[in-house]
Each structure stands twice: as structure tokens, then as C-alpha cells.
Image (tube, rainbow, N blue to C red):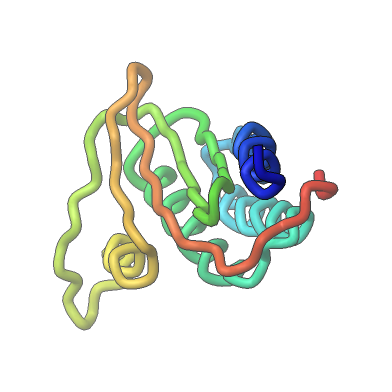
Length: 151
């Protein structure tokens, strides 16, 4: 057997190592103070993972989802962030099974633009019903790659 063929066979048998997925989740109280808390938690975790290049956008969009949960749902709120294969996903779960509907906000409206921000700034977003209510989420590509030594 030729040397390069034996090397190629050995190299093919060794699986490529992939960065391990990252996940963090927090329960939030259904109170207004949970919005800035969500921003701090997400920002801190992204910095810890070494993928904080888009931290401001992620924090803004997460706070919009938490605010929607406070306004339109009830009970505790679950905030979860995942990082895997260059994609960052943020989820906010609540007990209301009604899915959010994007609406057109008028010039003098004080609210109603959160889903428009999600649509404009995220790679994709949506909501899914769960047995206990729903999960609203967004995803963004991450242009940085954390090393495997971060927590």
C-alpha cells in the first residue's frame, strides 16, 4: 500500500473534533426588573463564551422577547441561549399559548415594534407552542468561534 493512501485511510478514520454546544438557561420572574436582568445575563454569558461580538443586538432582541412575555403572558419566564455550529439562538418561554402577531405600529404608538426589530435584526425568528405555553425565539449567525476552554 502506498504511504499517502495509508495516511489518507487513517485520517479518514479519525473524526473531526467539533466545538461542543453551549447552553445556558435562567428562570425570570414576571416583573419589569427581569428585562434588564435578562440583558445582563445574556451579555455576561456571551462574554464568558467569547462570542460577544453581537452582544448588543442579542441583548436588545432578548429584552424585546422578555418584554412581550411580561405584557402578554403570565407566570414565570424561561430565558435560554444556545450556541452551536456558528449559530446563536435565544428562546423565551412563557405560559401563554397564543403566538405573537406582528402588527404595524403607528407613529404615535409607544409599543408594538418588538417583532419588527426581530424581523429586521435577526437571521430568523418565530414562536412555537409547547405543552406549557409557547417559546418565542430568534437566531443569529456568529462570526466568532469560542475556544473549547470557556465555561
